[in-house]
Amino acid sequence: MSVLCGIDEAGRGCCAGDLVVAGCILPDGYSLEGLSDSKKITPKKREALYESIVTQTQYHIVVISSEEIDNFGISYSMKRALLEIQQHLQADEYLFDGNTTFGVEKLKTMIKADGKVPQVSAASILAKVTHDRNIIEDAKRYPEYGFEKHKGYATKEHIEMIKKYGYSPIHRKSYKIKALEPTLFTNF
Image (cartoon, rainbow, N blue to C red; front, side, top):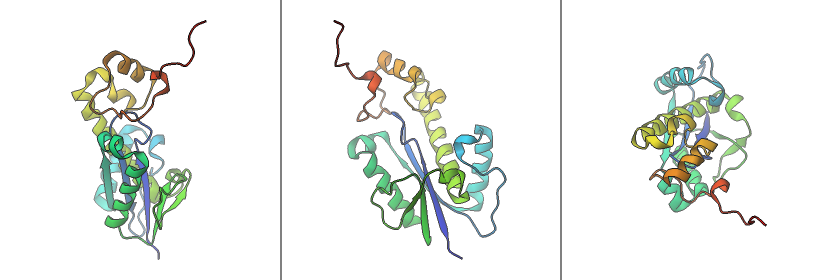
């Protein structure tokens, strides 16, 4: 039987906080009730599933800081994480949720794999829980931004906080946020 490593990420689209990429190999016959796309599971259920996954599977989690993303770019950071997972988890196939391989060989992609393939669902949960735990810790250091609510995504509230306080050390300065860009048009 071939071994499949499912891979997913959390935080790629955020304008603050870490990018987390996780890979997961499930043991033969492994079944976990409620395994699905992490975004469709309540935080409490994700935490419970996370604990089961880390005690019963082979996995590897890569955390990439906002500073590294600013220095090297999101594509390079994704490629580095995917290669690291391949080095740490030996599998016959690697399946990444999405539609791009970031130039990584022996990597297949599938859109919405996190809701269709158990190995990718497990990786999705590992990535999301790790990302959310990290950003909640960041929220304690930078409470004015409300990271615990929006998890680093560019919500209207988050953008207002950036306008008010400027960027924090965990913001991705290389990301262009349209709402923060000066407009090309002036009032006539």
